[in-house]
Length: 328
Image 1: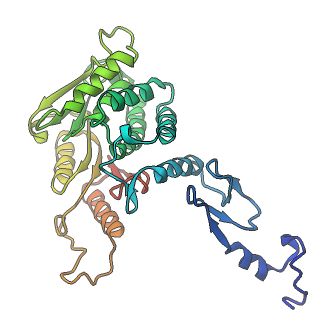
Image 2: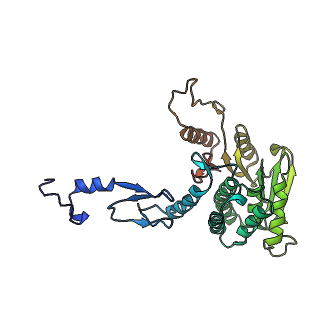
Image 3: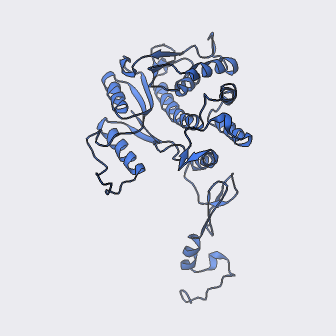
């Protein structure tokens, strides 16, 4: 007997005792296809599009994030993140199709972006890495929303030609290219010590398959690339600084540059050397018990507090273990 009533496994779960219901809720099974979790006997459930398994209710935005995580887990991986050496061109046809649908979903109203990026992967197989594509799309989605918020507050910046987005230490430049296509009336400048070959591949593909904005001679007439030190730039007050995966001193320097010039910014720190910010998170014999993810989150939180950032957002942990973006 439990609670004065006999246990009847044949009864409906709602008629069983609270103790047994709690026990049943802890029973889990995991889909071998997408690793979604099935929780038995939960009253309110949603259905994962990947494997049709019952899963716990999600907060707002959770359905989309789970759908994307199912895709990210199907991509080539090392440990818990997408393999940094995986090329889009080398993916199986079915996976590439899912990736193409993901790009369209992340580019609402601009489905041609998927055609552009798939074309780059086909014409230049070594120019588009799977991990770089996914993390850039996720980051640009968040950054684009922040820039939209600023432009709604200051609509004159859309057309006066004085608002510039700087993609500092741009590397492959994909973030700057996507932002230039999304905001055709805003100047976008990519800056790095050298211009990579993939820059030309992206620009040529957008010129071939993209759509020109009204009054523009070319698709990306608002985009330029400068070779040099990222911190030789002198932005104006109100400009927007972007830096994705700035290692060690780069992220603090970018935040200082934004503060000195009164700029808005979106900075995704990468590796932050222990003690760089004046706080240690690792002992000599590694017995402090802080794992890499906790260490990274603590360092980014300290960095955000030190420089007075407004908010911290995250992209999916399934893509990269350097997943936080600070905004201000």
